[in-house]
Length: 444
Image 1 (cartoon, rainbow, N blue to C red):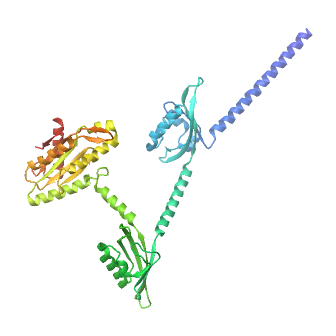
Image 2: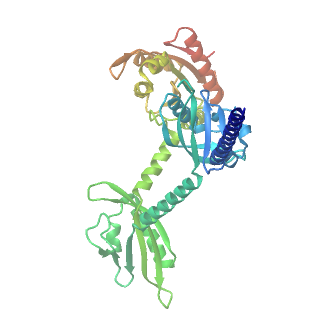
Image 3: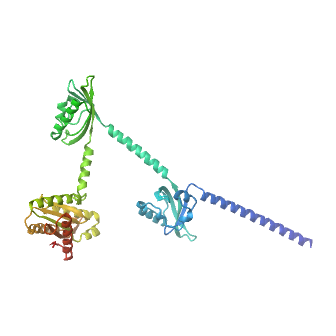
């Protein structure tokens, strides 16, 4: 009996010990869980997970700071809703790579905040697996790099300002003395072989087109004592034409007379070339070099004005390439561009210098014909166009046969103004296309 009681006491003691151990283990687990939650919920980084459809399945508390929304407001919503529109396609491709098992690090993107602003983020992402090892989505972290981006932008801006300052400092200093009429340069001016010369000698290297204006501007400054600015051209030793901008400030003596003039000159050839390029692109199609819609409208207005004064005619031909879609579909846009450039050149061979060939958009062109007597003159041009466009187009080893549908409207018979003329030509072109294409039709 005593032994049995002893065994019972031992069993109770063992049970109590096990219960205590369990409690300690439970407390340790709770402490570990609390520690884990603190690590997940309070870091500076966003911790997140997505399902295979790109919907949030988890975000830690950092979401409120990143997005201005609580995690619960975002869970179940697609991440694409937050991605800046211009980055959505790229980020979708990255997400698919991650769901394919590829880990991605330091992927920079931009997300929309609740206040309408944007936050720049750097993502680390990896595939998320289930217990069987199957990929069920993505998981990772994100850091706020907005300030870093701003700092980089500010640094870039500072560098740009410094670069511009250096460019501006690339000047050639000059000084003119009234008593000796000598012009002295800091370095040899372009087009001249010496750094010291008379003003008239330097003027001799200025282009004939600008020389008179150059001298008149300088003489006026010398007489008035007022600063001057002048742009002019110089022919360089290699025969190229360079543009310069000069600024001079007269220096007066005690009597108020100009005793000398100091100034700087800088090469603005690049600027002039850019201005010419911008001016050209404003009125011409970048692909074909033909007049664009803007210049077409101007030419059409001029032609109509002249026709009204002379009681003349203006013909508008709207040309649509037949089956051009097959070129882009089979050869791609590069081949399509080659064909369009070739079509533009062929159209130019069908008209007089006084006529206009313009690109109207896509695979449509317009020919303006003026100073003709009868519709038969327009027919001649239209038949030329059909012949040249019926010839095969060769591009990157392939041959394409197209043809064209042409609609023709004539002022004043079938169009009283420019808009009506183009509108009626367009209607006639669609009629030609409905009849099988590769033909022309007059409106009316």
